[in-house]
Image 1 (tube, one colour):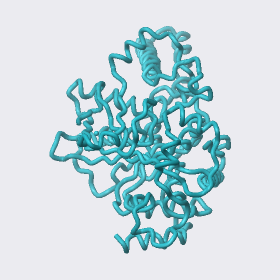
Image 2 (cartoon, rainbow, N blue to C red; image 1 turned 180 degrees about the vertical axis):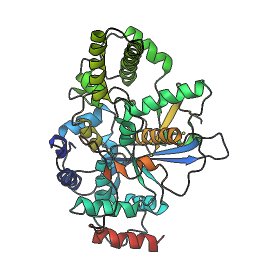
Image 3 (cartoon, one colour; image 1 turned 90 degrees about the horizontal axis):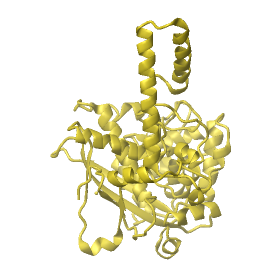
Amino acid sequence: PEPTWAVLPPRCIEERYKAVCGAARTRSVLSLGLACFKQLPEKVRNTYLCQVYNLTLLCTEDYVVEPQSVQFLVQHGFDFNKQYSQGIPYHKGNDKGNESQSRSVRTLFLELIRAKKPLILHNGLIDLVFLYQCFYAHLPESLGTFTADLSEMFPAGIYDTKYASEFETRFVASYLEYAYKKCKRENCKLRDSSGQHLTVEFCSYPAHMSRYIDYRYCSLEEERHGAAGGNNVPVCEKFSAYGWCPKGVKCPHSHNIDLIIDEDDKLWEKRKKRKHRWRHRKNTKVVVTTFQQESSGENMEQAQNGEEGPPRKQSCFEPAAATELAEMAPNGEGSDQVERKSKVPAGLGSASHPGGTHRAGFDAFMTGYIMAYVWMLKQGKNTDAGAGPWLPDCHNKLYLSGKSVPLQIVKSSFSKSSKAHSEKIKLAWDSA
């Protein structure tokens, strides 16, 4: 479903929250992706075991369906026949009876809370609102109460890879597939140069489970360069900036993420060379007029892009939020690394389909991979995580479109937890 807040000005976060709440109360979650990452201390540093789940769900209540969202999902291989015949049923809002002991999606969500592990999402505000309304309880009326509830539900912290991609790694673009492939590329460079790098391993599944496993192939380095050399189709500027294009598969321009990153890298290299030339001229005291012209251009570029980070694409509200709501995934493997020729299990419980990589389970894997990579970079050679938050710079910070500051997930002294949450969280710990 298309979020009503996508066209709102960013002046009021409370308005934005209420608009997303309205969507969560009237729309449904079609699939739920989980990627569980476990660090393997007995292996090489920064090695993780990952298990991915892709659950097809079916809301038992009436909900709104937009044709545009349905078309998007069908184009990316979502099986509506499977959803209505085999989807896991769930209801929204508060529990009905003693559901803490039943086997359901609501119980699964409660187990995630009981685990007290960090929760990682991408552009997480929308996901959190839907998760709360669909699998936990009725949403609070105010944003302050909502964030107070979340801070108690996930004491180990909530992390947003869109915020991390934009404010920590300072990527040119921060939509999910771009950030994932950018991290993967940089990680391959580190591995090839024998530097500290991320390694991901996957579970080995027995043959009788093969029909429940859906594999998604990562793009091949060799194929990418081959396609780049023989394909003169220009990159779609809108898709390049936002990861979304209103024309979808009918767009005449390229939506290839690898080609987009290639172009961005070339522009970044040109900018670095231009900056180097400018600094050289400054240090050698060239003619004043020439220096002033170059300096003016450089200062303007620094003002637009920031001295510390890569060049930024034009900032505006992201239509990609529409697709993020369409198939909601809470944004976490033989061996991966993730390598150029690897394939990733997109999730247990997901029937194979010849569609693209867009799956809730694969989205969850990409999200977890990004955060594991950012954690490796931020941690450096420090092996002592200390008693503080797992990743302090990103701890409890949700990305807000059009805002230069994140939404803080914290219990304010002016906000109390909601009654529904207080009752449910007590039952959760009592029955743990």
